Each structure stands twice: as structure tokens, then as C-alpha cells.
Length: 210
Image (cartoon, rainbow, N blue to C red; front, side, top):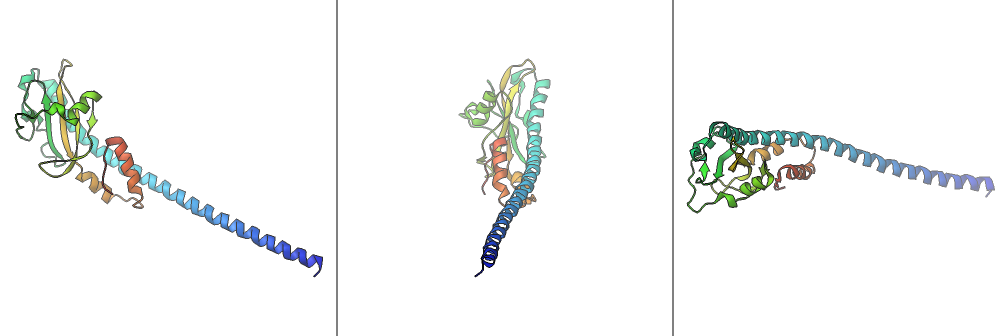
């Protein structure tokens, strides 16, 4: 075999290997780019859904805060507080109840529920968390004993017009609406849900079943 022929064969083999390598690299690069594009789309979709849920939960918090401000502006004597002062949630089926534990006053409940004599709201997470935070506080999810629904409590200190901390006002919020929003969302893949749950848990300590 002539040297020229051998060189052509060697060159052809090297060229084939080179082209094959380039093709493989191109394939994996395209695959990686497609994956990155999917993550970008997924990230945007998650941001939209998270923003919707954030807005909805903030609306529920506004009910708590508005009730708090109404009491602050209209009641000067802590002993004048009544359960009816916390019935502002009526008409919103996502809010199960609004209530308060106030110093020197029996437990106040907007739904009309009467607490047992030994009930002490100051030992509950929603109370201690709000006092420690000095403001808005979200509990971890739990199951409501009376309704069986998965809920969170949103609370904040109840402060008088003089700036005295009277206690804590809180609301129980059903998470069913949040679950419905996630299920109805147009997330591109089920893989997006864990990322959403992580983001929601970071904001509201919400943990939901996959």
C-alpha cells in the first residue's frame, strides 16, 4: 500500500473520529441547553404561581390587620373587648375564624366558640410567635380539630392606641384554596411543584404533600 493511500486512510479515520466527537458534544450541548430553557420556563411559571399565592395569603392577613386597627381606633378599655369585635371575617369562606387572647380577659372568638375554662391561648404557637416576632407571624400548617381542614394561623400583637400590647389577634386560614391554585396552575411539569413548595415554605412555612 502506497504511503499516500495510508495517509488518506489515517486522515479519514481521524476525521471520522473528530466529526463523531463534535456530533456527540453538539448533542449533549443541545440537550443541556434544552434543559436550561425548560428550567427557565419553569422558574418563570413558579414565580407567577408563587406571586398569586402570596397575594392571596396577604389578602387574608389584611383582614387580621384591619380588625386589629379597628380595635385600636375604637376601643380604649381592654375590658370592652368582645368576641363580636373579631367577626369581621364573615363572608370569607377561606377564613375559618378570627380570635384573640387578651390579658385579663377570657378567650375572645369571632365565630362564637366558647373556650373551656382551662384554655390558655398564651401557650399556643400563634400567640408566642407573634409576641416574639413583634409583628406578623405565620404558624406551621396543622389540622383544625373542628373542621378537619389543613390550615395555618396568621397572627400579630394586638396593640392599643397608647401602644400597650394587649395580647395577640389571630386568624385560621384554610389551605384548600392554596392547593387548588397549585393544581389549576399551568406549571410545565410536575417537577416544578417541589420548587414551588420550597419557595412557599420559605415564605410561609407551608409544607404540602406531593
